[in-house]
Length: 130
Image (cartoon, rainbow, N blue to C red):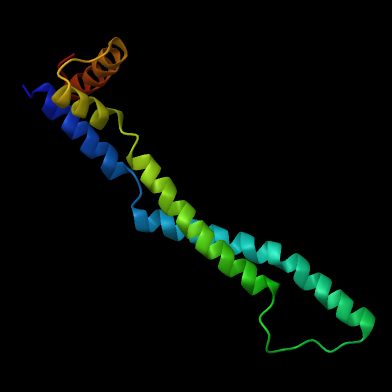
C-alpha cells in the first residue's frame, strides 16, 4: 500500500501533466492577442482611410498602419498573459500544497485534513480499495 506522501506526490504529478505547458499557453495567448489587437487596430485604420478619401490625400503605402501596431501589441501582451496564466495554474495544486505542509509543519489544519481525506478517498477508489 502506498504511503500518503506517495499518493499526494503522484496526484501532484498527474495534475502537472494535465496542464498545458508554458509554451502552449504563451502561443495561444499570443495568437488571441494578435487577432484582437489587429481587429481593434482596424478601427483607426478605417477612420484614416475615410479621412484620406474625404480630404483627397494619397495614403503612404510604405508606412505600417494601426492594424499592424495593434497586432504587435496584442501579440506581446497576449503571450505574456498566457505565460502568466500558466504560472498561476501551476501554483494552485492542492495535492502539492498539502504534501509541502505535511512535510514542513507535520500537522494539518482541519480544512487541510478534509481536503486530504477527499484526495485519498478519490485515489483509493481509483485503486479499487474502497
